[in-house]
Length: 384
Image 1 (tube, one colour):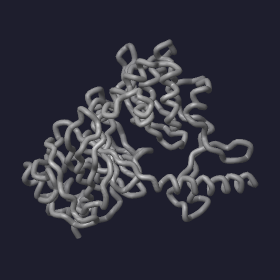
Image 2: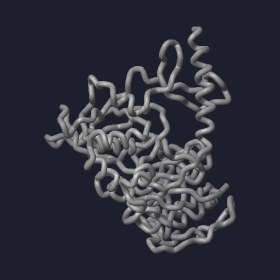
Image 3: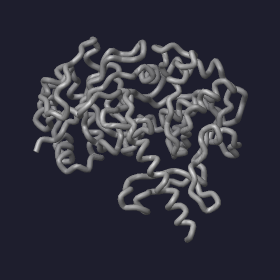
Image 4: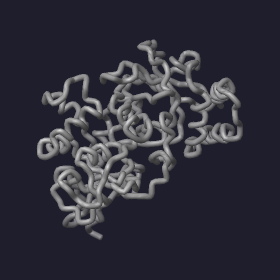
């Protein structure tokens, strides 16, 4: 029992650090293939912060695939806890608009758009399909690790009511709760029971995305699902690669980074990847052929699901994305569409920040790696 006091003291200190870190905001957003609208370089005039706007004032609204958007809302709205949103969800699942005009009418009758103050960033993510082996080789040298038995996630609300909903990750050593080791330290330890073996750069990208599919030599497909992390903050490596002259300023896409890491596999690539201290652990499941499952516990509709900051937004809410001015070459000029909040991400922090899920496989990966757009975000609020 005395150990709990040491743990509690460490938790309070850890939370203070977490609270300061949570004040930082990031900004990326992105679009998805054929559903993306407004591919021209049209800029919109921002409305007053926090203002209610008309649907007609949303750039790209008239070109939206309203029927597809409403279908995505039906798939994800069941996780919403707000009573008003739950009622609109019930209506959406009961009504079946016959065409796009009816779907648009349903959305405009049941919601009103409100702009979230400020401008942020849209990025994108996907579920990679990666080759894997069940035994180690020179090429497949990175172990896919399961969740360690000593990894502990503590709910701070059990110690201080004011910290309800806040969690910290670590392990108990010598009666003290301490941070879990970072990527560099974990990778120096031997994994006695790896779930599989992967190319190091492909494991790194699988950890960034959070889930994916492993393809074995005999053609079997195994889903690698998120099981936990070491609780360390996510640090992107693109900026460091630009600063070191490893990649040009306008070509730090996912494909460019992955290619560089593969070409420099070994100590040089390891040193770059270890700039990101966050490490993700997995569990393997049978592949059911469906899209990846997000934090809301349901398959993510490709191109219509976003990861958000759960301290700012709720699961199951509906948003209008207005993302333009891409920072990376080869990207779509704009992403303007409706999307449902169904996931979270370690790097997704702030009010105007979203990460768009674009699907599974190489094509989705190529698109996701080019998304870093300026974002204006609108919440669709149920009409009272």
